[in-house]
Image (cartoon, rainbow, N blue to C red; front, side, top):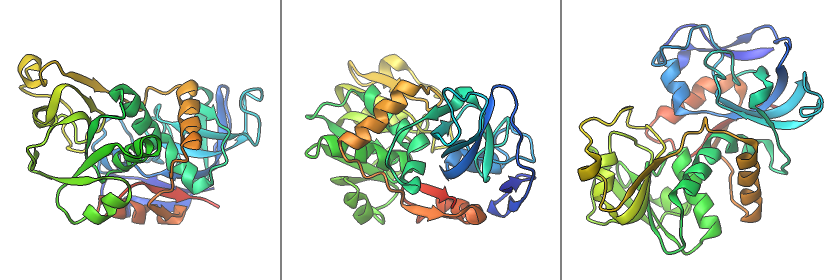
Length: 318
């Protein structure tokens, strides 16, 4: 089969499109014919050698959509069943989705029923699942004022689309490092663009709910812009900092406020079904911003790392 293999850490050029053996099934695992997958920042970190537990060579890819090609669980995962898979140690401890086929543990393969095309479905698993879980934890009310910190990211845009589909009149602001992407941001639903400069929001405004996608690097500043009783949900780590240093919960959390989080590894079938039902009920536009094919995964990495990247980047296989 064709796959994209990384033999040593480095830039996108280290992602080599080549022939490797198609995996053979083993007890508790099934073979998925990959139809599409999203490109994620965590895969860029791994490609650069910033995931110490990952050994090379490796086929990256922490999510996929596809169909069951060979199965060891014919009752739950019959051949031909449409499925998605997210996280676990896919693309880290064992080969992931940057290939025509992936051998995956049955416990992290989720059967789905959906009419979405493959490109749209490929944009959903990691990105929309993360956004949906964050939305639930933020306990959104129609009267809320909302800020997405990391507004041009795939998860930020997915979160905004999910909210605006249910509550068209709700006010959502999004951050960016400049106003260069302001027009594109407003097209996906942001009413306002707030510049985030050197970890500080360039606005005096405060918000009821903040989706924090930059992460520990900016959480303290986010709470400075949170109304009393508001909620900050720390979901992303786009700021490349993993821990809160010199954080005093009593002083740094907004008065009577709440700090919560969502982790996409917290996966279950019922929440996946709930998310897909929500997307269908509210007619959420989940189409990706950019689509590549398997032979051009390196180009997809180049794009996602560039200053012009916007929204979800996916790879679709015919």
